[in-house]
Image 1 (tube, each protein chain N blue to C red):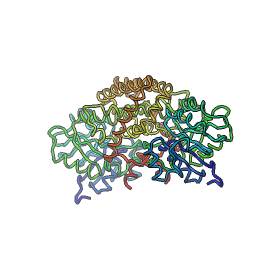
Image 2: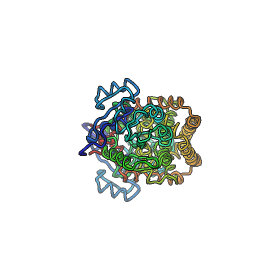
Image 3: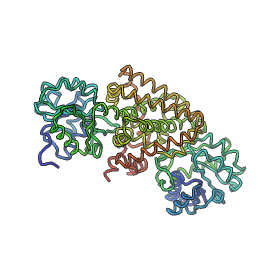
Length: 309
Length: 309
């Protein structure tokens, strides 16, 4: 895809779904020289070695960053500050330090203070994922046609930013620059609050005595199923997201509850017109998503076809 | 699939996603003699004729039911009583009258009083659907490996019930009998409340001034997308569901709000352990759904693969 590698040595700190998919995507395109990986858990490192996820898997983050010109923090948002502090003295001058966290203000506040002069710190966030996690869950096409938001701090080196964008684009993503606070609000709407609501709905079903768990599971195809997929995402990652994007999430949750009460009241009062009008408006947003290429219009996400295989 | 047709003449009243898929599935298996269809809107009837959805498309429900041994009410739940009243005098003795509505108590209360003696009234509800609606949206495999709940009133003729079950099974579904009130509660949990919540979340995004519609759409892959699919379902159908399954929906909504406030408080107080434990429990339900064959474990519902085609 490129004549010479975009980076010579990439260090992946954390080997979950995102880092694993990056490894696959970088290899698919022949985008970088060497891929070095590490993870805190010995079990994860063993699996990564077994499946050949990286060119080298090393036992510590300090080892991993040696001579790396791109370092990717791919650990839960709450762990990034500590990892940054640990690796900071070992970063190569001129290297780029980036991350893939779902929250950006908190990452900047906790990581930036440790970044030594001469190292480019350029946070990023690929908007892609599945409900699976761990070193076996990654795949090369995860970022294809998805967005990766780049959140360069003020005064960031334009060349370093362009190089990171080039890597994400070569991995299949579209890139866009965004301010950290706006990023956190947009994600609170499109991701964090929907996840919390899905977790809640699945929890309600789990608690309900008059309906058994097996009924909930058996009859899930009627809508509940889509909530459980979201609610199966990595618990540590999501705990950290809510703790570190607290204000925006609570803001959107407040709006959500207000809105829910309006619809609840319409149901209680039998106001069919209000419900009909509301449901008609929401339908239009769906059409926009299909047109923007961010989902397939195939019935049921093409599930039937998949199952036929 | 069968030596002789399960029914000789099936009348489909309403030609949306469910009736259309039934027509395709009945033809796929050669399950019935003639399929006669009708819809209230002339446009729907014209499309049905154009695409050859039924053997005959007629202009009124009264015409459609003539000599039919199975009559399927496939109109919004709120319209079923009026249709039943209209066709009742024209139903053939010995015929089976069924429906595909998402709420069962209300359908029984409004339809049963009109059913003449000698006609078997056996309500049913296939738990299958997509976000699409209208006469073009149906497909033969919609019911494959999905559940169809059969809700026979007390004293229903066992032979008539068995025959209707045989049709649903031959269309690919698994069948199970259930009491009307329990059905409405189970569906409030697995379908009706999730839909209302999805509609609400999409509505919140729509109202938020600081985040533009185009941002919501562009960055929807991070979770929001799955909500919009649900929230794109037919507005008339869903209005009627909430108006006619009011008590169970309000009950579950109340539990949902309680539960949401618990998580909201955990976020506000920074109680990471509570969030982590909650998210770990909900993950187990997802595994149950995959094991029960009600969803695919393919990453992202196999979306990537679909888009690659």
